[in-house]
Length: 342
Image (cartoon, rainbow, N blue to C red; front, side):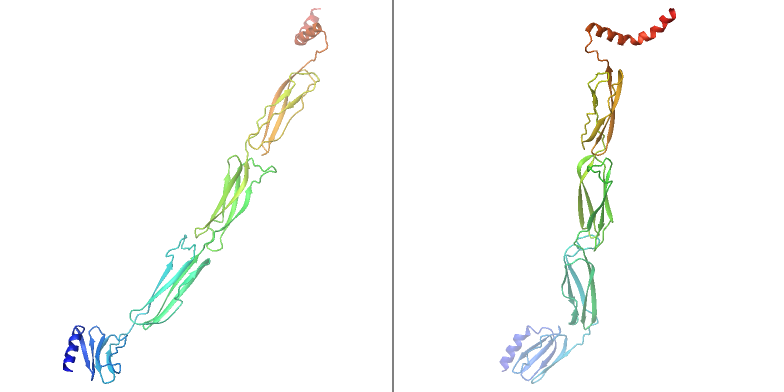
């Protein structure tokens, strides 16, 4: 037995370098180390050498026949648990602190001085619906007291509402405008709110089937757009090239005047000319008007000449009559002079 004891002590000597107390028993021995842990050896018929797994902070020890005693330092926990929140994603993907997708909220609860005896609201939770703000509170209790920690999450993954309100001025019956056109939209958002209550866009450039896009933005950074098409603007009046046919024309004859209008964008809606007056010989003018589909109107005058019709007369008489026509004005001026001489 002495040799066995010597060998056993030699085997344990390496482990028992720093010992604060020894408890010899009848058939076993225990030692308390300065680290506060216990090492036991010897007969274990009654579990004398089974050291409790959580036995720490041991100052002294005493071994008996069937039991052992350990003196444990009473370390009082005066600090409540530490709660650390974690969000995934860690930072909002939107603007102004708003998340624009699902958010996982988890907690880590720790206490280095005593066990956690209870906790509520600390499990991982997911925010999967839009909310103006939902708060998660985690509470934990240990020997040092109770602590709590709250996290508020704002989620808006839905774009705002964008609704066309007006188009000013309205297009005419042909679908055209001949002035600038302004399109207005209203903006609204049920969760984070719209940055602006409305947006507008003004068109001043001529063109057919132009498109206007209105875009609304909410405070989370989500956007939504609406497109208004069919904006037709023509500010240019038609071009007239009027003509009278025939020209020259005979006294009391029949003639027609044509505006010959063209419009490069919206096209001609209507064109007309006044009647040609052939009741007197000489020069005259006739007015023509044209309107395009946008409502632009232009006017122009065309000159024409009315002459006598000498058809059917002998050629010698015709020549004389034509000369007389040319000289009639001179003859009327000369006739009074001859009368005074008589």
